[in-house]
Length: 248
Ligand code: 1GP
Image (cartoon, rainbow, N blue to C red; front, side):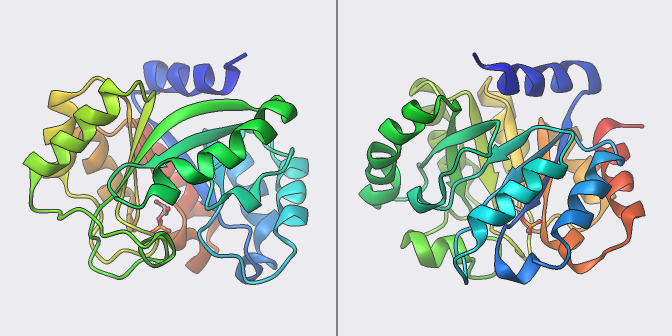
C-alpha cells in the first residue's frame, strides 16, 4: 500500500540519499516539461515531485498527465493546494505547513483533500513542511500567508522538527522556498538530523552539485532541485546532481 514511500526508504538505505527533481506544472514550463521528464529518466533521478504554489493557467492537470505518461520513476504530488489533486500521481506528500500559524495550511486544506484522496486510493506520505527564510520572498510565503522560520535559530528549527516527529510525520521537508538566494544551511540540517529520526528532504535555492553534496553530508536524506534545472537545460547538470547526492 505504501510502495512509493518504501521506494524512497530503499533509495536512502542503498544510496545514502536520494535525488528528487521538482517539476512545476505551471504555464512557464510548458515547453520544457517533457524534456525534463525524459532527462530525469536517464540521469539517475530517484523520483519526481510535481506541484507548485501558483498556477497561471488552467492546464496544470493536463501537464501532470503528460509528466506521468513519460516518467519511468515515481511521480509524487507536492501539493500547493487542494485544487491541484488529480489521479495521475503515484503518491502524495500529505503535508501540513507546520512552520506557519495559518489554520488553512495546517489542517483546512487537508480536511477538504482527505475524502477525495481516499476515493482515488492514492498513497499518502505524512510530511511536515517547514518553510525557512531563504533570503527572497517565496511564492509559498505569499500564498500561504505565513512567516518563514529564521535560518539562524537552530533551536526554533529543532523544536518544530521534534513536534513534527512526535505528531507521526514520516518525512520532514526543510524548504528555503523556490528560487531562494540562501539554501537551507548545513547548520540547520545538522541540528535537526542530530535530534530527530525522521528522514529530511531539503530543497530551495540549491544551485550546484557541491551544495547538494554538502547538505547530504550534514544529514539530508533527499535533495530537491527545481529552478536551477528550469534555468539550465543542460542534461549533464541533472546527472551531476544525482551523482553528487549519491556520493558517486
Ligand atoms: C521548492 O524546494 C523546492 O519547493 C525546490 O526549490 O526551485 O529553488 O530548486 P528550487
